Image (cartoon, rainbow, N blue to C red; front, side, top):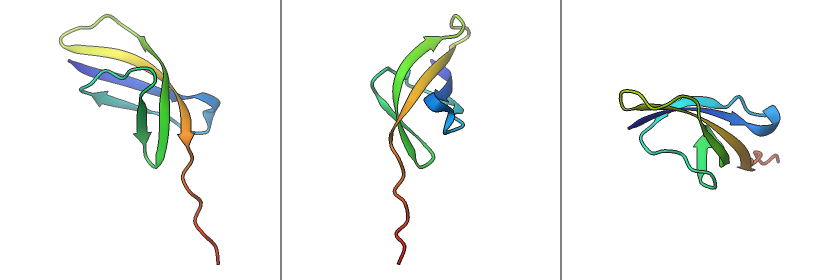
Length: 72
């Protein structure tokens, strides 16, 4: 099964992403988008599976902000 996942970040501070995944995302797990790490809060099915593809929506919450560069 291939999962087409729309990732939406709570608060709008990150644009999110649309990605194809081979493992179904699960609430409570973490994912990296760029330099940011997010916790998956909720996963919803958008349409019934068809031809080995399932469309999902995942809501994310940032758990670790990238470290700011040190200034001298």
